[in-house]
Image (tube, rainbow, N blue to C red; front, top):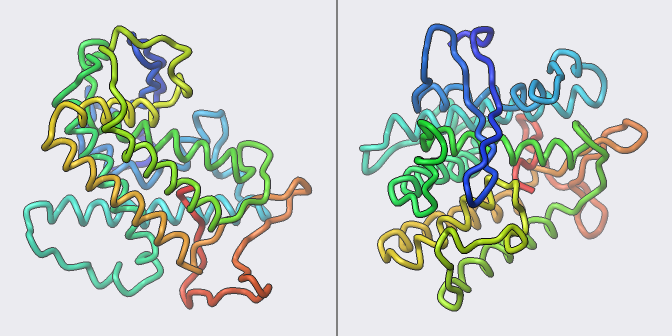
Length: 291
Protein backbone atom coordinates (compact mmCIF):
# COMPACT_ATOMS: atom_id res chain seq x y z
CA UNK A 1 0.00 0.00 0.00
CA UNK A 2 1.46 3.36 -1.02
CA UNK A 3 1.93 5.54 2.05
CA UNK A 4 1.34 8.69 0.01
CA UNK A 5 -2.14 7.65 -1.12
CA UNK A 6 -3.51 7.29 2.43
CA UNK A 7 -4.80 10.05 4.66
CA UNK A 8 -6.73 10.03 7.89
CA UNK A 9 -9.89 11.94 8.60
CA UNK A 10 -11.14 12.39 12.16
CA UNK A 11 -14.90 12.60 12.42
CA UNK A 12 -16.39 13.84 15.68
CA UNK A 13 -19.64 11.97 15.97
CA UNK A 14 -22.18 12.50 18.72
CA UNK A 15 -24.40 9.52 19.42
CA UNK A 16 -26.51 9.62 22.54
CA UNK A 17 -24.12 7.89 24.92
CA UNK A 18 -20.51 8.72 24.14
CA UNK A 19 -18.78 11.19 21.92
CA UNK A 20 -16.87 8.56 19.97
CA UNK A 21 -14.14 10.03 17.81
CA UNK A 22 -13.84 7.71 14.83
CA UNK A 23 -10.64 7.80 12.78
CA UNK A 24 -11.39 6.83 9.19
CA UNK A 25 -8.83 6.12 6.52
CA UNK A 26 -9.20 7.73 3.14
CA UNK A 27 -7.52 5.72 0.40
CA UNK A 28 -7.27 6.96 -3.14
CA UNK A 29 -9.75 5.32 -5.53
CA UNK A 30 -11.36 3.35 -2.70
CA UNK A 31 -14.72 4.43 -1.34
CA UNK A 32 -14.58 2.47 1.94
CA UNK A 33 -11.38 0.90 3.30
CA UNK A 34 -11.85 -2.65 4.54
CA UNK A 35 -10.56 -4.50 7.57
CA UNK A 36 -7.31 -5.46 5.87
CA UNK A 37 -6.65 -1.82 4.94
CA UNK A 38 -6.82 -0.85 8.60
CA UNK A 39 -4.52 -3.71 9.59
CA UNK A 40 -2.00 -2.76 6.91
CA UNK A 41 -2.16 0.91 7.94
CA UNK A 42 -1.52 0.15 11.61
CA UNK A 43 2.23 0.36 10.99
CA UNK A 44 1.82 4.07 10.13
CA UNK A 45 -0.22 4.96 13.23
CA UNK A 46 2.48 7.22 14.79
CA UNK A 47 2.55 9.29 11.59
CA UNK A 48 -1.27 9.51 11.54
CA UNK A 49 -1.37 10.78 15.13
CA UNK A 50 1.21 13.46 14.35
CA UNK A 51 -0.57 14.44 11.14
CA UNK A 52 -3.83 14.89 13.05
CA UNK A 53 -1.97 17.51 15.09
CA UNK A 54 -0.63 19.22 11.97
CA UNK A 55 2.87 17.73 12.29
CA UNK A 56 4.91 15.71 9.82
CA UNK A 57 7.07 12.95 11.25
CA UNK A 58 9.92 14.05 8.99
CA UNK A 59 9.94 17.42 10.78
CA UNK A 60 10.72 15.69 14.09
CA UNK A 61 13.55 13.43 13.02
CA UNK A 62 16.46 15.28 14.64
CA UNK A 63 18.04 14.89 18.07
CA UNK A 64 16.55 13.07 21.04
CA UNK A 65 13.04 13.81 19.85
CA UNK A 66 13.82 11.97 16.63
CA UNK A 67 15.28 9.02 18.55
CA UNK A 68 12.10 8.74 20.63
CA UNK A 69 9.77 9.07 17.66
CA UNK A 70 11.69 6.58 15.52
CA UNK A 71 11.53 4.03 18.34
CA UNK A 72 7.72 4.33 18.30
CA UNK A 73 7.59 4.09 14.51
CA UNK A 74 9.76 0.96 14.53
CA UNK A 75 7.67 -0.59 17.30
CA UNK A 76 4.39 -0.10 15.44
CA UNK A 77 5.88 -1.64 12.32
CA UNK A 78 6.85 -4.67 14.40
CA UNK A 79 3.41 -4.87 16.04
CA UNK A 80 1.73 -4.69 12.65
CA UNK A 81 3.83 -7.59 11.35
CA UNK A 82 2.62 -9.73 14.25
CA UNK A 83 -1.00 -8.71 13.65
CA UNK A 84 -0.69 -9.69 9.98
CA UNK A 85 0.68 -13.06 11.11
CA UNK A 86 -2.23 -13.57 13.53
CA UNK A 87 -4.70 -12.66 10.80
CA UNK A 88 -3.13 -15.08 8.31
CA UNK A 89 -3.24 -17.97 10.81
CA UNK A 90 -6.69 -17.27 12.23
CA UNK A 91 -7.95 -20.73 11.20
CA UNK A 92 -4.82 -22.54 12.32
CA UNK A 93 -5.20 -24.31 15.68
CA UNK A 94 -1.44 -24.49 16.23
CA UNK A 95 0.19 -21.45 14.59
CA UNK A 96 3.97 -21.20 14.63
CA UNK A 97 5.81 -17.90 15.06
CA UNK A 98 7.62 -16.78 11.90
CA UNK A 99 11.40 -17.16 12.44
CA UNK A 100 12.03 -13.62 11.17
CA UNK A 101 9.91 -12.30 14.07
CA UNK A 102 10.62 -14.96 16.69
CA UNK A 103 14.39 -14.54 16.59
CA UNK A 104 14.70 -10.76 16.34
CA UNK A 105 14.09 -7.67 18.47
CA UNK A 106 10.53 -7.66 17.09
CA UNK A 107 9.69 -10.57 19.39
CA UNK A 108 9.55 -8.07 22.29
CA UNK A 109 6.39 -6.65 20.71
CA UNK A 110 4.45 -9.89 20.34
CA UNK A 111 2.49 -9.24 23.60
CA UNK A 112 1.55 -5.77 22.35
CA UNK A 113 0.28 -7.31 19.13
CA UNK A 114 -1.66 -9.99 20.99
CA UNK A 115 -3.48 -7.27 22.91
CA UNK A 116 -4.18 -5.28 19.72
CA UNK A 117 -5.48 -8.40 18.01
CA UNK A 118 -7.70 -9.25 20.99
CA UNK A 119 -9.11 -5.70 20.96
CA UNK A 120 -9.98 -5.97 17.26
CA UNK A 121 -11.89 -9.18 17.91
CA UNK A 122 -13.61 -7.64 20.94
CA UNK A 123 -14.77 -4.68 18.82
CA UNK A 124 -16.25 -7.15 16.35
CA UNK A 125 -18.23 -8.87 19.10
CA UNK A 126 -19.38 -5.57 20.60
CA UNK A 127 -20.83 -4.39 17.30
CA UNK A 128 -22.59 -7.73 16.83
CA UNK A 129 -24.47 -7.05 20.09
CA UNK A 130 -24.51 -3.23 19.74
CA UNK A 131 -26.29 -2.44 23.01
CA UNK A 132 -25.82 1.30 22.57
CA UNK A 133 -26.99 1.54 18.96
CA UNK A 134 -23.65 2.73 17.62
CA UNK A 135 -24.17 1.32 14.12
CA UNK A 136 -27.44 3.25 13.82
CA UNK A 137 -25.85 6.46 15.11
CA UNK A 138 -22.59 6.25 13.15
CA UNK A 139 -22.94 5.59 9.46
CA UNK A 140 -21.14 2.47 8.20
CA UNK A 141 -19.25 1.97 11.47
CA UNK A 142 -17.06 -1.13 11.32
CA UNK A 143 -15.15 -3.05 13.98
CA UNK A 144 -11.87 -2.15 12.25
CA UNK A 145 -12.68 1.57 12.48
CA UNK A 146 -13.61 1.27 16.15
CA UNK A 147 -10.40 -0.67 16.85
CA UNK A 148 -8.18 1.70 14.89
CA UNK A 149 -9.75 4.71 16.62
CA UNK A 150 -9.10 3.25 20.06
CA UNK A 151 -5.47 2.48 19.22
CA UNK A 152 -5.11 5.98 17.78
CA UNK A 153 -6.40 7.43 21.04
CA UNK A 154 -4.07 5.31 23.16
CA UNK A 155 -1.02 6.34 21.16
CA UNK A 156 -2.05 9.98 21.24
CA UNK A 157 -2.13 9.79 25.06
CA UNK A 158 1.29 8.12 25.05
CA UNK A 159 2.71 10.90 22.87
CA UNK A 160 1.38 13.49 25.30
CA UNK A 161 2.81 11.59 28.26
CA UNK A 162 6.26 11.17 26.73
CA UNK A 163 6.69 14.74 25.54
CA UNK A 164 6.21 14.22 21.82
CA UNK A 165 2.92 16.11 21.93
CA UNK A 166 3.02 17.59 25.40
CA UNK A 167 5.03 18.09 28.57
CA UNK A 168 6.35 14.83 29.96
CA UNK A 169 7.09 13.69 33.48
CA UNK A 170 9.23 10.81 34.68
CA UNK A 171 7.19 7.73 35.48
CA UNK A 172 7.96 4.31 36.90
CA UNK A 173 7.26 1.46 34.51
CA UNK A 174 6.58 -1.07 37.25
CA UNK A 175 4.24 1.17 39.24
CA UNK A 176 2.37 2.24 36.09
CA UNK A 177 1.85 -1.34 34.91
CA UNK A 178 0.80 -2.48 38.38
CA UNK A 179 -1.68 0.37 38.75
CA UNK A 180 -3.28 -0.27 35.36
CA UNK A 181 -3.50 -4.01 35.99
CA UNK A 182 -5.22 -3.31 39.30
CA UNK A 183 -7.76 -1.00 37.63
CA UNK A 184 -8.52 -3.60 34.96
CA UNK A 185 -9.11 -6.24 37.62
CA UNK A 186 -11.31 -3.96 39.72
CA UNK A 187 -13.53 -3.11 36.76
CA UNK A 188 -13.98 -6.72 35.72
CA UNK A 189 -14.29 -8.22 39.20
CA UNK A 190 -17.04 -5.77 40.16
CA UNK A 191 -19.26 -6.64 37.18
CA UNK A 192 -21.48 -8.89 39.27
CA UNK A 193 -22.26 -6.17 41.79
CA UNK A 194 -22.92 -3.41 39.26
CA UNK A 195 -25.99 -2.97 37.11
CA UNK A 196 -26.12 -0.82 34.00
CA UNK A 197 -29.22 1.20 33.17
CA UNK A 198 -30.61 1.29 29.66
CA UNK A 199 -28.44 3.31 27.31
CA UNK A 200 -30.79 6.28 27.35
CA UNK A 201 -30.54 6.41 31.14
CA UNK A 202 -26.91 7.51 31.17
CA UNK A 203 -26.17 11.13 31.99
CA UNK A 204 -22.96 12.97 31.06
CA UNK A 205 -21.89 13.38 34.68
CA UNK A 206 -22.04 9.60 35.16
CA UNK A 207 -19.30 8.98 32.59
CA UNK A 208 -15.81 9.88 33.88
CA UNK A 209 -14.24 10.05 30.39
CA UNK A 210 -16.92 11.40 28.10
CA UNK A 211 -14.69 11.74 25.05
CA UNK A 212 -12.83 8.46 25.51
CA UNK A 213 -13.39 5.84 22.84
CA UNK A 214 -11.46 3.33 24.94
CA UNK A 215 -13.71 4.01 27.93
CA UNK A 216 -16.80 3.69 25.73
CA UNK A 217 -15.64 0.27 24.53
CA UNK A 218 -15.04 -0.87 28.11
CA UNK A 219 -18.46 0.26 29.36
CA UNK A 220 -20.17 -1.25 26.33
CA UNK A 221 -18.38 -4.57 26.84
CA UNK A 222 -19.28 -4.63 30.53
CA UNK A 223 -22.94 -3.99 29.79
CA UNK A 224 -23.05 -6.88 27.30
CA UNK A 225 -21.10 -9.13 29.69
CA UNK A 226 -23.78 -8.69 32.35
CA UNK A 227 -26.41 -10.01 29.96
CA UNK A 228 -24.61 -12.63 27.87
CA UNK A 229 -22.65 -15.45 29.51
CA UNK A 230 -20.72 -16.42 26.35
CA UNK A 231 -19.66 -12.84 25.74
CA UNK A 232 -18.61 -12.52 29.37
CA UNK A 233 -16.40 -15.59 28.95
CA UNK A 234 -14.82 -14.11 25.82
CA UNK A 235 -14.42 -10.74 27.53
CA UNK A 236 -12.65 -12.43 30.44
CA UNK A 237 -10.11 -13.81 27.95
CA UNK A 238 -9.53 -10.30 26.62
CA UNK A 239 -9.00 -9.04 30.19
CA UNK A 240 -6.52 -11.85 30.77
CA UNK A 241 -4.56 -10.91 27.65
CA UNK A 242 -4.43 -7.25 28.72
CA UNK A 243 -3.02 -8.21 32.11
CA UNK A 244 -0.53 -10.62 30.55
CA UNK A 245 0.64 -7.84 28.24
CA UNK A 246 1.16 -5.48 31.16
CA UNK A 247 3.07 -8.16 33.04
CA UNK A 248 5.24 -8.81 30.00
CA UNK A 249 6.04 -5.11 29.63
CA UNK A 250 6.72 -4.78 33.33
CA UNK A 251 9.21 -7.64 33.37
CA UNK A 252 10.92 -7.06 30.00
CA UNK A 253 14.13 -5.04 30.49
CA UNK A 254 14.23 -4.32 26.74
CA UNK A 255 11.04 -2.22 27.03
CA UNK A 256 11.52 0.89 29.13
CA UNK A 257 9.65 4.11 29.72
CA UNK A 258 11.28 6.82 27.62
CA UNK A 259 10.35 10.51 27.57
CA UNK A 260 11.73 13.92 26.78
CA UNK A 261 12.81 16.00 29.76
CA UNK A 262 11.67 19.64 29.97
CA UNK A 263 15.09 20.67 28.63
CA UNK A 264 14.61 18.44 25.59
CA UNK A 265 17.00 15.66 26.61
CA UNK A 266 15.93 12.02 26.53
CA UNK A 267 15.20 10.16 29.76
CA UNK A 268 15.16 6.36 29.57
CA UNK A 269 14.22 4.20 32.57
CA UNK A 270 15.64 0.80 33.29
CA UNK A 271 17.59 0.92 36.52
CA UNK A 272 16.95 -1.68 39.17
CA UNK A 273 16.56 -1.11 42.90
CA UNK A 274 20.33 -0.97 43.37
CA UNK A 275 20.75 1.57 40.58
CA UNK A 276 22.25 -0.90 38.13
CA UNK A 277 21.10 -0.86 34.55
CA UNK A 278 19.02 -3.84 33.54
CA UNK A 279 20.36 -6.27 30.94
CA UNK A 280 19.57 -4.98 27.46
CA UNK A 281 18.62 -6.78 24.29
CA UNK A 282 21.44 -7.41 21.88
CA UNK A 283 19.15 -6.18 19.11
CA UNK A 284 17.76 -2.83 20.22
CA UNK A 285 15.88 -1.17 23.02
CA UNK A 286 12.22 -0.34 22.68
CA UNK A 287 9.57 1.71 24.38
CA UNK A 288 6.56 0.87 26.51
CA UNK A 289 3.54 1.23 24.26
CA UNK A 290 1.14 0.52 27.12
CA UNK A 291 1.19 3.06 29.92
